[in-house]
Image 1 (cartoon, one colour):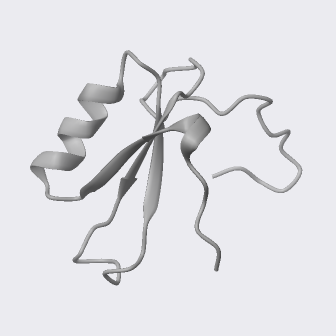
Image 2: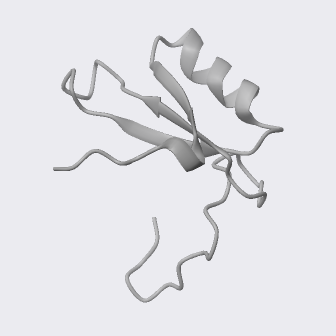
Length: 77
């Protein structure tokens, strides 16, 4: 979690642990045990980690969709 005074990265980075590569994918997910059905969470992924992160979420039944970062628009509200 970034604190309000922490500088924000110029380019979104991959969510994989230790990765600092630019994100090119948005993995949209939801944990039905914690979130309402319409709630969507996101992880960002570089090309190298897209499959690994997708599989991690997929085997748990959390993954809803994978979208190119440039095509993704956050939901309002």
